[in-house]
Image 1 (spheres, helix red, strand yellow):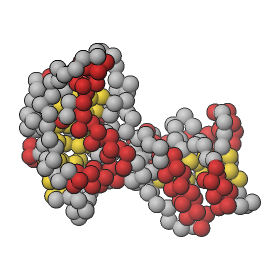
Image 2: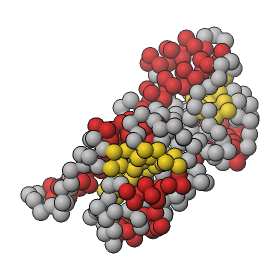
Image 3: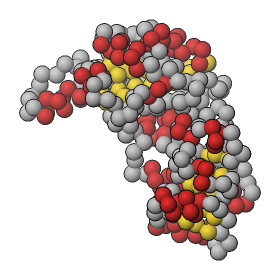
Image 4: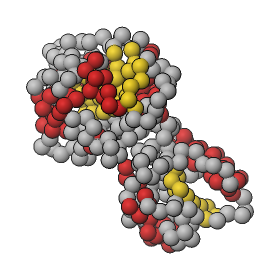
Length: 315
């Protein structure tokens, strides 16, 4: 069997991989697109991001371990309609993505973005933020996967009341006070001090946050998106931000990335933008590769894989 890795595996993780595959199997880390295509002809396992362009060059592939949690970029027809098993990194990135969400919330609530702009001008004071205390907030989390769970965990550290909506989960997870079906999204958004988006991008969630449910948010509420930009109707969000119908938004993701220079979001002083950076962590590579190696051991033993993606649902 040939195992192909688009991601670099080094040090102790490479030693572990070599111990897992022994002399019976072959492991290749291509250094160019040409080598990837050549080696891919008889590869059975692929680790990394398998793009729509690369997939046709993997005629014998049986299992793809994606290095990402979100599967929207893997939902092209050739892979979605194939018999290839697809697993993702769901749950691995929850801690640092949730950290980013709370960094954005705290930045908005405490006026950090105004202070940084003043710092650039060597100016003391002059802040525009009302300096909000988030302790005891009511938080609404959209999506109770790995990221949503970590958001709820952090929310409890701030003594927040946690309400969540989820399209599939029916049992209330730890750290969640109320769990509602997705049909109650607008009801939840009307009741909370901050809405955080943690659901995957699928055909069902595209445009899920729209003018209708944004309009019911409280004028003092914050909106945080660290999931995927197209989950939100961006013109509708811009409209409520410009009209000050909500307090502010923290956005790590946008509908088009990079965010176009002409986007009104850049000019809004009640918005903090980070460049799809929430997935970054000093632990990311080690976590993802360790998970791949765990799954590889299962694969070689003929055991069920973890984090199998339902390709028809998109997660």
